[in-house]
Image 1 (cartoon, rainbow, N blue to C red):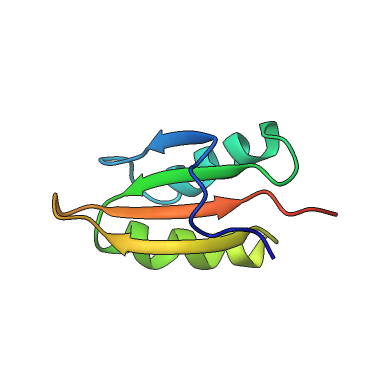
Image 2 (image 1 turned 45 degrees about the horizontal axis):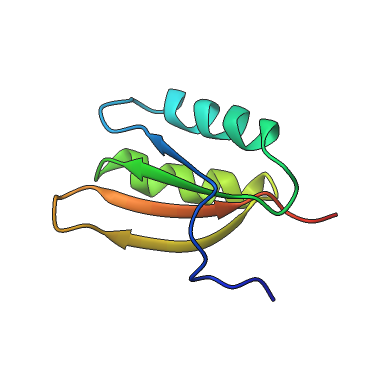
Length: 83
């Protein structure tokens, strides 16, 4: 199993980006990353955090971490699956 505490390979700040554009940008970014790479995504509360993680899981990506920051946005760690 991958180390869920590993630091992300890249960060994508999608605060202020509406649905479904934030999911589309996330998916495009992940598709450009290496297999097994970890992406940290910053999302707003509400619809983005409700929709994006589920959409990523449905598309076969591995959501490893989801937490609310003290600054009021959410940090999501998603891994490009191996195989």
